[in-house]
Image 1 (cartoon, rainbow, N blue to C red):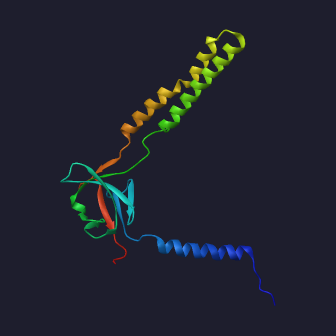
Image 2 (image 1 turned 60 degrees about the horizontal axis):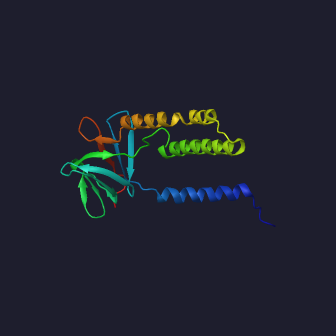
Image 3 (image 1 turned 90 degrees about the vertical axis):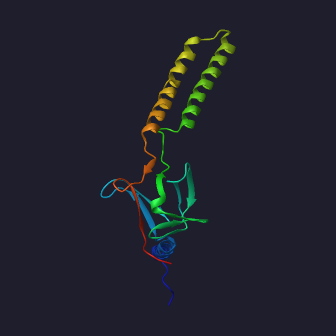
Amino acid sequence: MTPNYSLPRFIGIIALIGLFISAKAQPINFMILGKQGNGKKYTFYEGQEITYKLKTDVGYFTDKILKLKDSAIEFATYTVAYADIEKVRIDKKRYLIPNKAVWVYGGNILAASAVLELAYLINTGSGIYNLGTQMLYLAAPVPLVLLANWVYGKFVKTEYTLSADEYQLRPVILRKD
């Protein structure tokens, strides 16, 4: 009797193995940055980086979380108590359209208008000023998008001040090693 091999059964077995491997590889302990109750919450897992400011220091630090404890975060070279952290910074998208893409678009429009102007000048011996101005109309959104990106970046919240009535860091310890 020959064994019955089927592609769907094989794919199912591989998927189950992948699920078990990924479930085992996921960090278990994490901490939540958020307000009490409803609202936006951010989750930090062991092995992930966090950017924070201590109450006693002026600048921000970015460190990789090695282990989360009930009252402190353990980093590679030191341990910080949750009560000693003043602010947490979250890296967010701070623009509507990336500025680099806007500059590339504007540069391409200007280059295309210059090439078309030059080609017309070579072919006819005289330039058409109207074509260049029409091409510049296509580049008109560039300063508006840059201004919109700047305004949007000013209103996107990236720093969260920790306090008892506002944002808090709460550890969720599911496994103690």
